[in-house]
Length: 364
Image (cartoon, rainbow, N blue to C red):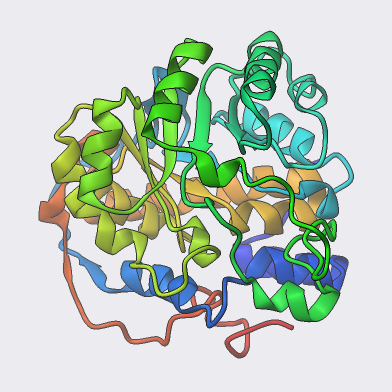
């Protein structure tokens, strides 16, 4: 059923009404001091546009491609764990929404439902899987086999989660890092398979899967160059939304050096603090192929399930179309560094600072 939210602001407010405190804290918070979370927002705020005028912008096309898949807008759904805490069908709602709208979801292996069930929500649509390594080599083969049998067309490995982070908002509200309570203080930790993942492991996953490989969590030029050497098809610039290493650089600040190191040998996705169509255009101007949304996705799902996420994507499309016309471009491929410059932010950065009508720096 279509929903009629005019902007993202009422979507966020509706999501807050519907979510329990622990699920809300898990969705919006970052690690420790949340400096990295705020840096992400500040990174996009430090960029201003240099628009061109007297350009025919009567026909604006917001579409692009990623791994050969057409995207109605250069925005994909990031992998998010615990989505069943936000909407009953969890990641299945994401698969349905992205299929309906016309973009690509990246499904987390800890989204809250089995990967086959999630894929069946839109069996003929394009879907990518993100896999956390939670077992030995037999487990890896089993999971990659399940991924391929379920119809996922690419494999994403998140590389910035070798060890767990301290996400203090949910630690204080529910005593856990995740809505499910799987990381409660005092429990024995599981075997540290994720801590043993190396570049050699990446070679193994690529050869074992035989599908395009995305490496999510790249934050330096050095690792971007290594990722290309190890066969990654997509370099995903991310600090996990400020939820892993606190005081990490903003994704916007890391992006230019990574684009230079990749040198066109792979496509580039970026996430972290991307809230509006103007943020998307800034990322593409710096060299990204597409961006990924996490918290925006979660707010849409929590507010109105599948239809809420579709509406988030529609709003982003409207914002993109308007900003592209005002910037003087008609195709995303025209964007480049000539359209942006550095500036001084005018608003203190926090997780709600993109929406001036939401009071304060936090909805608790």
